[in-house]
Image 1: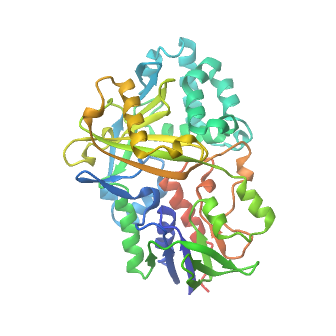
Image 2: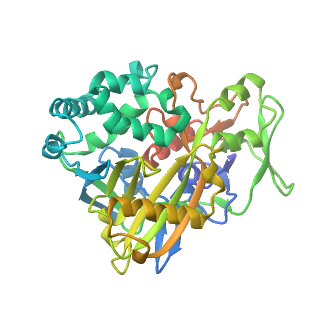
Image 3: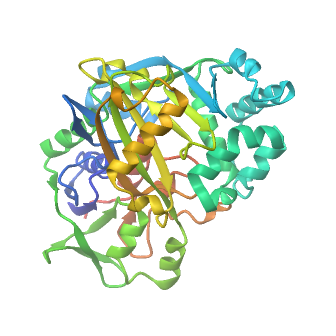
Length: 434
């Protein structure tokens, strides 16, 4: 029986614990926060539990479906046709299929046709390796033309990635389009997305309950101070209060910067390699409102007056998210960690978000907002620059039996729960009984 210590109680950590609980292992999970779930946990906003960050499911999320089936909660899966919009220089354009694209006056007639062909190309393409070394900016301009790039993609990249925007790999952009496009029933058909009745915490709780029933131990409010090893093999963990725990395997399921703080004595070449991988953080404003801003689930934004590149009206996907029919709106601000907005108070961020939404819909304002919350995560999005395929870390570190499950390993995919669970499955196969 192998003794396995897992650092991090988000979807990767609890998914791995669940998977290992089916084998001859003794598993312990350590989570620094008071609650399990990581970015997938919920909180109370008004009378309902609301997801701290927005999550949606695509038809291609096969690992997600496998877990739902194993846990007996597939009946909680719901699907809905959703709407997408594009707010450009004061005008809101619907963006739901071929007819909307052909009517989009933000693009020239030629650019509309090119954009439709581009979407079809991304949906059909499966080999992404040749795109890894190509900057997304150059790739998009080559395929769409300069003006269409400026209208559709330049603000999305610049507002999200700031100084890093011209370093982003074309492979990463391709996969974002590919995943959603493949989820549609036909080329440029209306978007169809899924969600769990009760939120993503239904999945997290089911994983935790199943793992606990097989003997997994979960420690919350327990930070790890140091990963202990002898330079060759992992030996265990030391919590921040000085307690020592011996393990045969240790798996880090937290962002790379946190892993590096816990393991300062890694081989220098490996440590330097991981330090070169950077992240963008997010400040996410969540509003509970009595009125909608639009009828879209996802609204991309290209307007110089608005400091974010889009927002999500989650109740346009799941109208039963609230018990009283009020609306839930997520406004994410993606920021480098040195950005001045990190010092802004929650109240300032909320006021900024409401003011920006009132530009999209002049009738929306503070009078419509019932409750608010702000979440902050400094490591929300890995910066997948060109050539990232060769820089993303493997599961096995230079220290034997010290393993990583980390969002950078999803490349070229963006962070998804389905992809994260697939990573956990891969790591579980590397852990052998003692």
